[in-house]
Length: 249
Image (tube, rainbow, N blue to C red; front, side, top):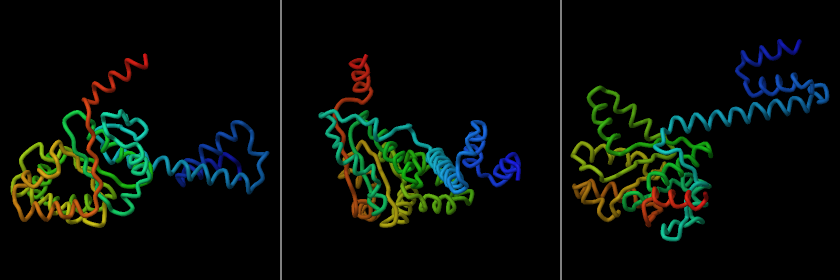
């Protein structure tokens, strides 16, 4: 079989990594120096790497993160009280493997959403399915879906995610319907998947936000069963990054 025919069949089979690698080596006239076994191994590795890269890109795109953040870009100023060792452990994503939750609380501007997105991005790099939502917008959308019949499909999609990020809990009051939806989301994921929630409010105040004792107890019991807490402090991260950039100039 001629080499052009091989390339064409690779395209038809959507073996893009193999196709690109084989074509590159043809252009460099290097294929003759490989044994058949060596060439096959090289092409298989190229295809594997290509599929892994495309999978990660797809996971990141689907997650729809608020920030394109990464663990490597986190700032560990002493006043932030953000433990680097703890973040490096989170980077291994064992908390997802063991279905633990993470609650991130702190005042406005300390980088809660950025931190949640960095953890989510790292999970995508490890091959986990992740979705990011502003909680208020998600609850409003799910209420609309109850009316058009697409609610159960979306709830099932949320349930299947390895990591669900719910940002800005407590910024808006939670009505009766939203409370029940939030309970269903948390219940479906309880002890099976991991959830990250960020909030300006201390965790102890979340009962008041939910504002219905029975439902609040049910939600909080499930969230706090297996949980890590992160409470970054310090000045606004915008000021911190500006100061660091000025010092680096």
